[in-house]
Amino acid sequence: RRRSPIIAPAAYLADPTSLKAAFPGFDFHGDGAYSSEHYASVMGRCEVDGTQWCSNCAAKIPFPYNSTDSQVEAGIYMSQISGFWMFLPYALIGMGEICVNPVLYFYAYSMTPKRTQSVIQAVNLVFQGAYPPALTGVFVTAFATAMPNNLNNGRIRGLPVGLEVFYYIGAFFIIAGSPLFLVARQACTMAEPEPEPRATDGDTAGEQAAPSLLSALSASVVGAQAGSFAQSHTLAQRDGLLLS
Image 1 (cartoon, rainbow, N blue to C red):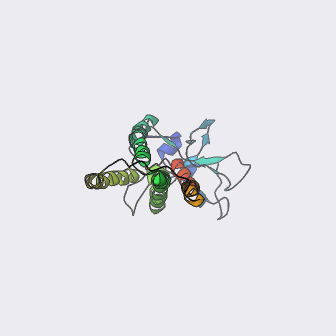
Image 2 (image 1 turned 90 degrees about the vertical axis):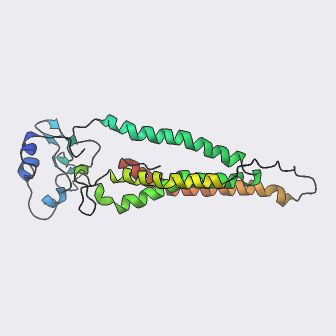
Image 3 (image 1 turned 45 degrees about the vertical axis):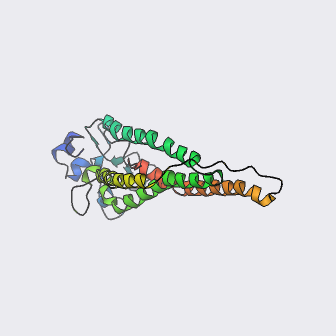
């Protein structure tokens, strides 16, 4: 993306550092709503000579700042790069979920006793639906400077590393996690659980009701955890990031 040419008005391409070229018609003055400081994170005026130059996927700022009725906006210019490049990471995500999730569901039900199936499935869903978005939120916050409004200007401690850092983090987890998975696989012995005897008339009502109560409690815990991380998952998708 950084090497791709920017699709922008000719005046901006001639001198991107010029406020007059980048923001034609913007009367910057003072330190209030008309201050140029509010527009340091964007690239220039969106509509120039009847042409809309800004990307619809990036943030736009009205002029004057925080105006609710102004038709004049500034934003981020698009880069000349095909959106089909996103097919590769999303294809990898899809193949990973297809290959991993059904297997985990199978083990959670077929390789555990009936009385603990709901608990194991709850733990499985936590690590599938709650843990990844929570971990994503931590890294998104830690590397917020890598995702400015203008992704071409992403920096981490002054280094020219932007949004791609999250792919490096994902690769690290794959490289570090694969040997751990192989070690755990060699140490574990998979065996189908023996069938449990049916409840008899001598069993107490409390013993018979315990599995149902445990299942309902597990379902409510999983639902609460999934809801608490829904907002961070949505923000990660909005920023074009999904670690799975």
